[in-house]
Amino acid sequence: MDRKQALALYRQMLLIRRFEERCAQLYVEGKIGGFLHLYIGQEAVGVGAISQMRPDDYLIAYYRDHGYALARGADPRSLLAELCGKVTGISRGKGGSMHFYDVPAGNFGGDGIVGGHLPLAAGMGYGIRLRQTDQVVLSFFGDGAINEGAFHEALNVSALWDLPVVYVIENNRYGMGTSIDRASSVKDLYTRASAYGVPRREVNGMDIVAVRDAMGEAIERARKEKRPTLIEAETYRYRGHSMSDPGKYRTKEEVEQMMKSDPILLFGRRLMEQERYTQADLDAQDKDVLAQMDDAVEFTEKSADPPPESLYEDVYVRSPYIHLKAAEKDPAWRAAIREDRVPEKLPPWTPPAPREETPAQVEAAAGKAQ
Image (cartoon, rainbow, N blue to C red; front, side, top):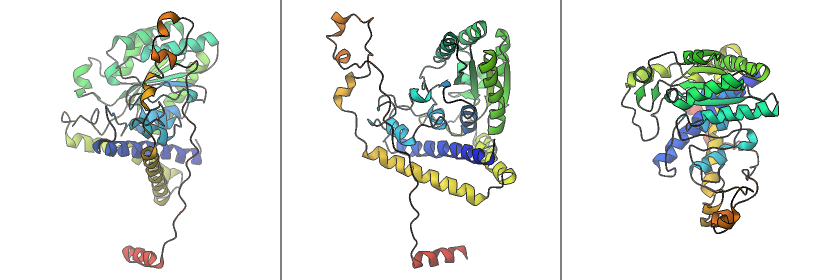
């Protein structure tokens, strides 16, 4: 990882943090409805893992999925529009918070069912095996999914068939409001892979460098040896399970203690100590990201709501296996298309030009500095 890439990873984590903070604000204002699960505090896992993927690799995740889409390069404008139910959203305003799909980027979205996507990840790995390519699947899920039957089924079949899938447990210590100590008889979750002969390891999920190293090794194994891996990334979420969760099951002191290991704070220190960036350089990145979020909000507010007739779209994809005599009576079938549509490609975001300060503003800024 060179100096320029290190700064880019810092910016990605910062973008996720500011995006989620703005989402929380819009939710309180009533502009985002439904469920909203924030990724604040866990940024190093998604950014570190996805930075090791190739463009043709795949990922599939669970309902806390905003960070993965941003780390995979999705435009925050289309993501914010999706959250607000706009037609310009990445799922055309129909998926909402838990369903950020970006198939052209290999992102097969979030899943609202705990552990429900793990067999799908195995199926994607099986598809790679049938095609005989060297692609890899990354599957993210929380500690709450490790007691689901789908977790054990997916690991067993992945080991049995040598599927190139990397399973990543984001252990943020709480499955909804239940502590991992009360939910699992085995505290080291990664050791569960030993029952299936699957390579496993744990990693500090607050350290993006450690995550990159662990994921690089696992992805290389999947790509060359066609073997799955289970990684447990120990991390922490600062907010509740969702916006409706006040988080009273943990103390304020616990959260404050964990925030001392904030992934953005720690990596920012590393950039200043080892990569010779200054605090001013990091502040400039933050300023630019905040401007990008302002632009995303403006784009969303100007976007239209989906038209009523779009209710019938995206229900079916035309298939020769459908019984046409019955299906043709269904307006959703008539609105079906032969191929799935992809989101509209938005022009690249460009930072606003700096405004020239008036002599009075310069004088006022000088007074504040003194």
